[in-house]
Image (cartoon, rainbow, N blue to C red; front, side, top):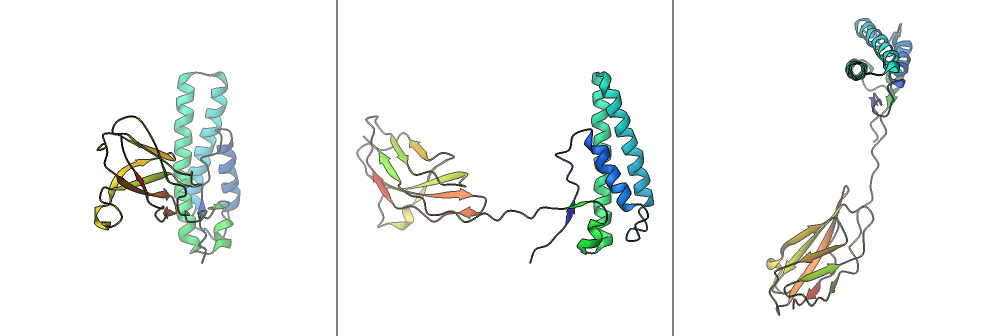
Length: 207
């Protein structure tokens, strides 16, 4: 079931567009029978809309003080819009048609990301540097980070796995490994949708 709700959608607006946004809400909510108690908030909205317009005009002449005043006016206009969003949500009782009659817009539903697939092509890149292990794998679309696990005992001891490191790229370099001792590695990808399954296991032998 998709739940719809309204929001301000002002973050992307320019300073000049903020008063226009307020005008839309004022026209939609004034004498709107669904919002009979909105007059005090609408009066405050009109007051702050006018202040924002005046601040925009003053900024045409430049000046740090005028810029600071305009920023404050935007913040104050945003605050009253926040109050109105809360009021509309309360009065609409979940009715989307009533909520939209306020002039506010529906919040976009979150994009459901597909789960990450299993990491592929984990491999050990040989190095002549003592105690160094370089691991690489295929980049995963949507992965924010990768967590690499190490096991000094091999796959026969599943309790010996521990995290060896984390990387935001499709590679990880480990230093100060025990030269001449085999180690086994596997990894998972991490994204906003969760954690992938483990990759295949690969073993590496530090020089």
